[in-house]
Amino acid sequence: MEGNDGDLLYLDDIQVGQKFGSANYTVDEAQIKAFASQFDPQPFHLDDHAARDTLFGGLAASGWHTAAITMRLIVTSSARFAGGIIGAGCEISWPIPTRPGDVLSVESEVLSVSASRSRSELGIVTIRNKTHNQVGEVVQVMTAKLVVSRRPVASAKS
Amino acid sequence: MEGNDGDLLYLDDIQVGQKFGSANYTVDEAQIKAFASQFDPQPFHLDDHAARDTLFGGLAASGWHTAAITMRLIVTSSARFAGGIIGAGCEISWPIPTRPGDVLSVESEVLSVSASRSRSELGIVTIRNKTHNQVGEVVQVMTAKLVVSRRPVASAKS
Image (cartoon, rainbow over all chains, first blue to last red; front, side):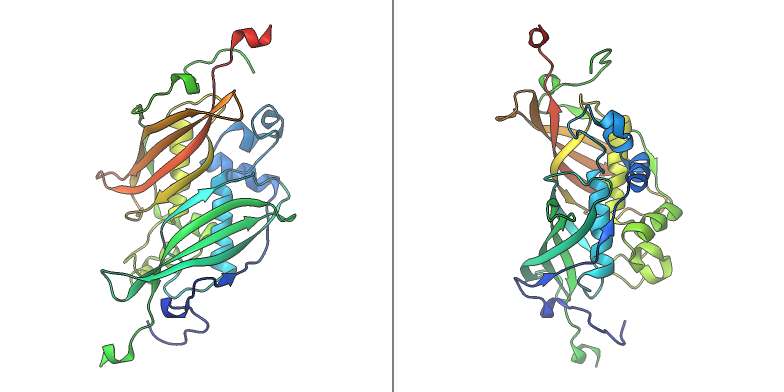
């Protein structure tokens, strides 16, 4: 794939400490219940009344919904990595739940950059993505290992 | 909440080494594209043709889709923990992608069980959930820390 890379970032362009922001995403009650019905059908994600007697004390989004929204924000409005945002794995914690009406945004910071030992055209970027709500509370911390392309070497084509 | 606990598992019932299976879940191309459109809109999750020239070599489910399906299988057909399946955090890796037509199932194993230091009614169970496809390949390993209720002490109510 050649052509206009625009502002695509290759491994060679990425530095430890680099930060990226995102757009906002508003989560409503209907979305929380729809996601939960499909993937995490538990009372505290489906029914506000039933949620009151649980550890959550009220309707809360599935952590996997928070993770999926975070991914959407990263893919659509954060760093544009060459080859896409491809995770090999990650660590996630959910300090507090996402609630109906929350407005989420993601702040990402590069923690490490390394070339692949086995594949010279690839590398691994470790990036910490903090998902905040509208009052600045952190609802999710996700530290991901991403597979990122190195900038193609022109002479490799001749 | 009292009443018939059925086969609900409390922290006190859970042992290191305990294993749980799940039902099966068939993933089709339409589901892969629908999830990706909403949460991970990248070419390799949306379009088989575009996916051929990427690291995936063909249409692949978003890792977050695999995670969400895994959660559904755990919640609907695996261990029934008292208080529900509530994750404080987890580690995930995706050794290979989920593909259209894959039939996924989850095999879970308890790695550790500990009482909470700060809240006597709760504990933490660390559980490794391996998601397999229909030929036994592991598409995801998710090691989660779950918040699990201790069995209520009858005398606490008198």
